[in-house]
Image 1: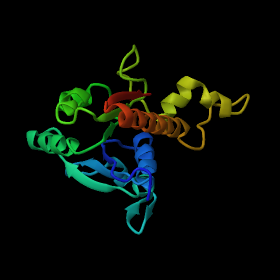
Image 2 (image 1 turned 180 degrees about the horizontal axis):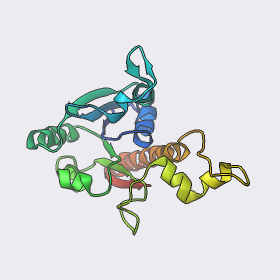
Image 3 (image 1 turned 90 degrees about the horizontal axis):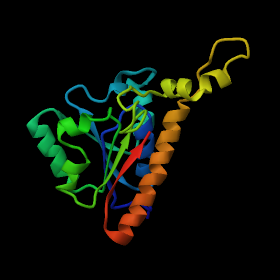
Length: 197
């Protein structure tokens, strides 16, 4: 028996931070349903390199998951999402702040159908504050945090770290925050909102 059996996750995340989080949850036994855009699917499905015609950048962080495609901008897509959310323990997303509210699938909307839900948002600079509306990819965080200078040559140009270190750090932070929130929910019956940047 795995520790997260009977724990259902709706995964709206893309690229690396959220998919890394839900990969670990899935491999701990969670039932992770990746929600992809209809009809295109996840952006990383088109990235190279490809192995047997499948994108390795998609397959690696999305293994051990099931997928469903829906148009969250449509009323039918939103209604379907909320029906699935009513049966889910965790919703995780990494859109820019404000997107899930505009779609009608934010924490407050989901709590109406699942009061004890755990809801995790991952963004570059958090849901509040002066930088909240800035895009947030790993390379940007490497620049803002000084990693580009630390890994460059002393008299040369800044250099990108070999892996998406900030995405993995955000994913790991989300992971232990979700597990702590689940432990609290088991004791109190209360869900919570988790903001990771």
